[in-house]
Image (cartoon, rainbow, N blue to C red; front, side, top):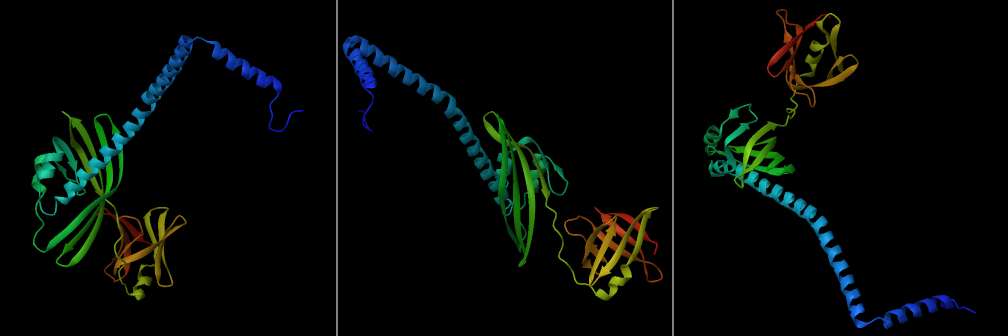
Amino acid sequence: MVGANSEPAGKNTNRASIRAGFNSLPDQTLTMIARMHLKSLFIAAVTFAAVVPPARAEATETAGLSDELMRHAQELFDAIVPGNTEPWKKYFADDCLFFDEKGRNLTKAELVADIQPMPKGYSGTIKVGKAKSLIQGDTAILSYDVDETETVFGQNLTARYHATDTWLRRNNIWQIAASQVFRYYEDPVVGKIDIKKLPDFVGTYELAPGQTRKVFVEGDKLFVERKGKREELFPEASEIFFRKGVEGRILFRYGDKGKVEALIDRRNNEDIIWRKIE
């Protein structure tokens, strides 16, 4: 009878036969088998090392390069306040393209000349972060946020930008070949307005036949609606309003009779006029 921890007699016989077979082999044969086994293990290890580490090494190298380029970016912005041009000379290629948040297209010489110390009474800091990178061969694209804090005679200002730099490795030296900066849009501070003036703006305004928008008041708030879409108009000044997250301004123009005659949709300093029809 076989117990719970016992094996069938046949299995014991087979294992005993295998052991006996190995024991009967000459020592030279056993040595050859051992060498073949070690050789197989060595080949497997080399194959694994050849396949896995390069990918890991490449990822590590890419992450390391991204971190290094971000340090260079921070070094560039740290140099702005004191007007230190050396990092800008070092990290920008002589044939670089540079487009700033003001829409200027600068050569390297113009860019370097633009780096001047902040005037007396001005100070600030610029920090980079939230980086994303795309690196392939001798090209690295680095995109990141730029947070600026400026103090002007004790008053604080803040601004947020986004920069994208294209680095090229030429002659084993990484330099910026192209850079572009834009400024994030931010709503102005909501101003105070005499709510008694709000009814002056109420009415229907026409851009062209069949193209109208309505302005109305609910409580102490002003709204504009077009094709079923309504938006609140927030005051910036007594007759100047803005919509949350939308660039541009909405202005109301008074006529000679002292009544509002038009709504002005101002975009990038250009005006679209909506005539008041009722």
